[in-house]
Length: 561
Image (cartoon, rainbow, N blue to C red; front, side, top):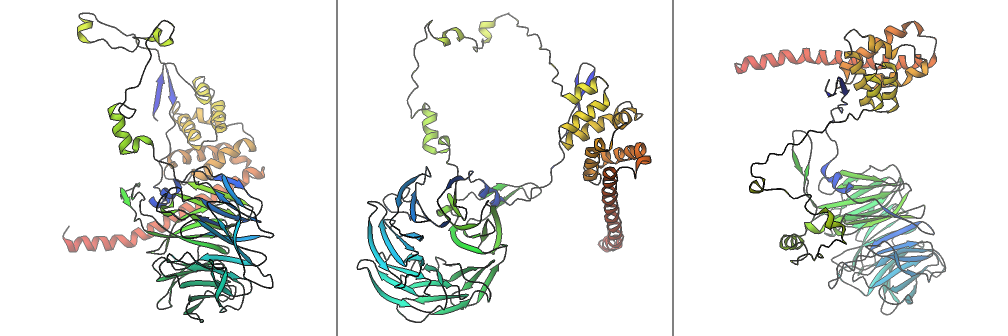
């Protein structure tokens, strides 16, 4: 027993239990470095989140968040998470707020079938109105064309029709009627303005060329799963469909299913793609592996009604991280490099998590400035010391004398008496109040403290009287916390040398009262089951050892060892 000595008393040293190897992946730890979410409550369910695309002139300024909830669009500041602009020109519920590729124009659908355009930089006035549905059916998905085309957009509604618009004229250029049920998802190619992907409640996903009337390719996501969201990856060679609790990836060229991600428990509502380019690739990992590296590259993020946002590695289709939120996730989006993640929930809550900014001294320019003087090369100005200053009376206290100043003078410093800082169970142990010491350790609710005190009681005197005095004359409720610890740690190899003798001592004292108290009998049965399980495991391991030993001996004989 490791202990600290204060006078004639050896203070109980609580040694922490040996920790098990960490099962957390290095990349999962990287995702957990995101700060605690900034929460805001909106007027209704947050059905859409989208970050502003980066501009050539001011990339950092073009990262504001567009949030769609209730009958309005909100433009949220990237740094402060405060609403900087609102678009409220909707007579009914707004849907699918989205940015144009240059980040200067915003479009959104509505419950009345009207698609509206707004300026993201200037006034809140409506720039253009386009009537998708003449019978007033909702338009729940709006997307601008990709490939640098800033003059066209697509809208999909509950009339199962996808329409192609020229926003400069406010006129429809073509329509596509391939779905037989609500069309709820559109994704445009980033390289070709004519290629787009749609998904609907008819369980199908269609790939289109805007220059043709019929779809180029068709997939059935699942026979019983309406498609909630689709995504055409930047390369254009892979498509992602989401519906029910499934997320499936398809090869666009061959039309074959590449992978099915079934890690969610409820309907998958949204999917996003992000490339981790500037991520930290090295992380310390416990065990024999040392520093493990993880590859930065493309990741697929999915959000679901089960409240989880999950991250997959696209190269291996492997789940690498998951985050739980308190409400069903309806929408989410993240910035390039995953520097910020915004999640919209059905309860109207918006959660924004940001990656911590680097400290000033971590920047090379700041480090050089600190080396030159700590303030950009300039010396810090300090006022002259006078008797009116408090620092005047503190001068010289920390000054160290040199050997020349000391000369033959010898300075003797009297050692300070170290005062014992005893905890309540230590004070009781010092006064030989063993029962009180055990009670005080149980009040800490720390198994390590309780086991350390019990180990000290076993070693006290060597005859077991201290342990017997601490355990005796206890009621059934008083034995409950002790039995709970024994049930948990009696078969743990890290604590077996302490917990097994304690269990023997408890049954030596209370074997005659078994069957009187239901509480005590329940714990006895739990302890018995735990011991039986450990004995069975040891027997199975012994059988396995008996099978392996002849094979190992034969191998050693062949190798001449």
